[in-house]
Image (cartoon, rainbow, N blue to C red; front, side, top):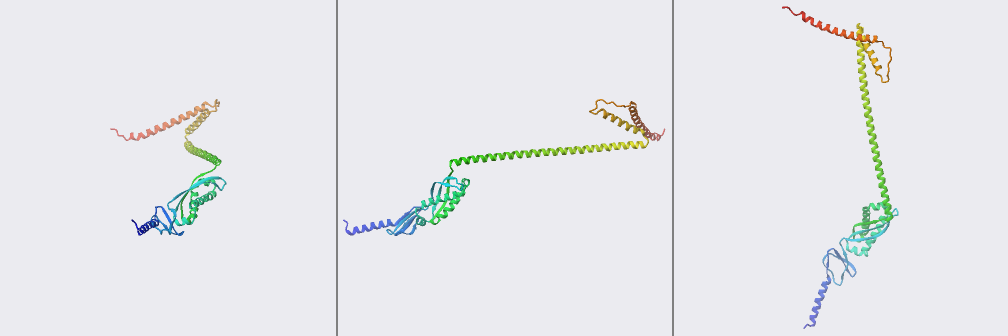
Length: 324
């Protein structure tokens, strides 16, 4: 049977247990709790086992210190060239200072969302549509820089801001498709014209080289012809000189041979002319026969001189022989 004193002891023990449970706080990993004493912030509880003063201190804000994701809903944006597009995105942020995030701003996620949407309209509205579609990385960098600077007093770090989709109106997409097709056709025509131009240039260069080679060939042929005529003229001059020397020495047969040769060559040239079908000339047969006789006498004289030279070269050898 319990007496009054026993009930007091039991009540004190139960009170102590309740006080201990009220003063011991276990904080999970990735969270920070703020402690308020009579409504005023005093300190921050970190992950693990923590003690507070029961009935005087209480847990204020429970802040998530892990990196968090916030979806940015689709909104209409008017670009600098008055094109209307719809864009949405995603925001990654992390709480670095739990007391400032808890007490510097009310409804933290709503504040971050509205701040991000406003800056999306500002940044994208300052760009043309072509820049908007082709420079998404620049948009993300500018948004991250602006929003991170704005939320820094709240103890928040913006890690990434990404634009997910940029959707122009359907009629604008069709116009852009037609423009792209026109640009591709234009580039194709330019490339085709450049190819034809290069082909014509190469063809002209080839013709030029051919004409140069032909001119060089004609020049070489002319040089060879001139050289041949020069040698022929030298031979003719030498022959004329030989005949002149023979005539000067009193040898008339050489002159007859020279005249007969020129006479027969002239008749041959007249007879072989392509425009000459019939030739009627008062040619005296005796003159031609006399020329041929002169050629024969010249040949005979040459043969007699050669025989006399050979006999004269043999006579001394015969005179030196002794008879037995």
